[in-house]
Length: 292
Image 1 (cartoon, helix red, strand yellow):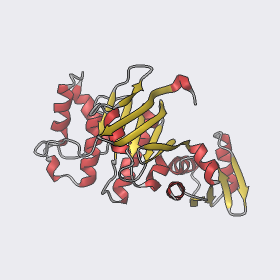
Image 2 (cartoon, helix red, strand yellow):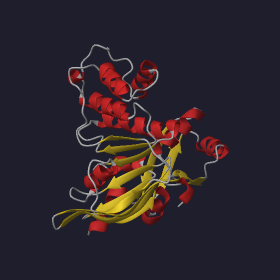
Image 3 (cartoon, helix red, strand yellow):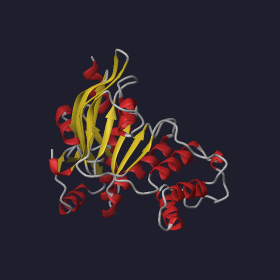
Image 4 (cartoon, helix red, strand yellow):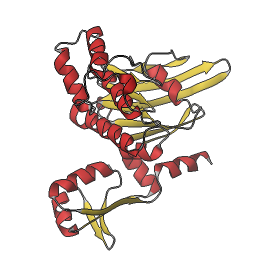
């Protein structure tokens, strides 16, 4: 781990309720510019830990260490939206509370970022779809462009298109704005697409802390890609610095690569993708194996 790039260290963190430890001696670090996926079943301690990180509750023992001051944003449980106000007015209220400079330009930027820029300014939030409300919640959390964004179950209840919209926003926040993101979700297949690091909790403890590369090595996975011109794609990707192998089933890439990033990169070559898939154990299967 690059200690110079650490945004936050959690050291010996515990939270007790009576005799019950909801979080039990948790220690791990989050790197700047990474998406950290928090994995665990109900009761594992994820939400309690997130509430501590957000300053909503205090730990019983342990500490949070920020090597440098960090501006944070968060969506915890049900975010507060004013249902009888429009998206614009919700954000303007938040911008004025934060005394942001040029709030009008900031609101335009944020609404476009979350895909709500074309929504009628008179449309009230209570008339938004679930996916729109979730993206609106993200807009509120990033109105002042925090360095560290905490998202607790941001895709709960969304349909596949809504999940993809949120995924694309999170990746864009990391890639274009350099935000560090801690995200908790029960949808492990989605975390697998997003996260650079996986912190797995069980009964209040961290039982695994793995990078994407660590996970790929543990489960012996490969990322396979088949296109209408594999030789052309291989040459194109190697020009971009991506290591590519060639097997009978197609091209083989490092399993830690994000599928969506590969799709976007190959799309720039203009060559059609026929199939892209991972072979080997997935995060969900690996997680369940740890509990058995």
